Structure formats: C-alpha cells, structure tokens
Image (cartoon, rainbow, N blue to C red; front, side, top):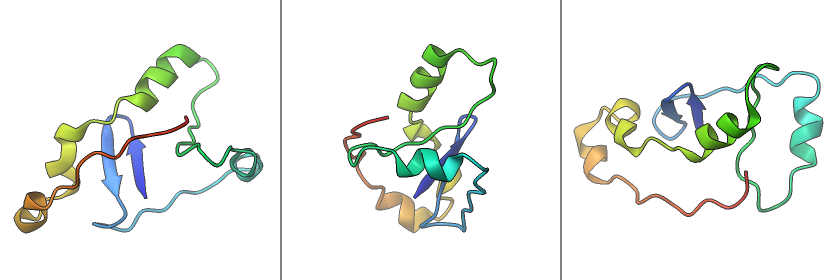
Length: 85
C-alpha cells in the first residue's frame, strides 16, 4: 500500500502506514469497483477536476523520499499500470 499526502508518497513496504477511516469512508470503499485502486478524501471546496488530476499524478521522483535506503533504491520497482480512480 502506498499513501499520497499532498505531493509526498509513503510506502507501507518501507515504513508503517495507517489510514484512519471516518464514518462514510468504509461504505464508500466497499462500493468501489474491483478495478478501482485509489480512494481519495478531500475538502468540500476542492475542485473535483483538480482532485482527479492530483490522483493521477504519482510523483515517481519522490522515490528517494519514501525509500532512503540506497540498496532498496537500486531495486526501485517499475510503475505499475493503474486502473480506476
């Protein structure tokens, strides 16, 4: 699992990651299609088009930020195709 907060990625394979779900989050996640791989919560006044753009933008250049271990950096996984948002 990876978590994106702002423009920073956190990878659960490299450090503990916890997502604290609010009331409707579990119900919304349960209704996601099998192809969907991303769930986003955002402020009410955010522009949905900008949110979709942000969700599609996975900052691969931040790999060193989420993976400070030099040995693991050499084993950087190739980006996997994303289906659904």
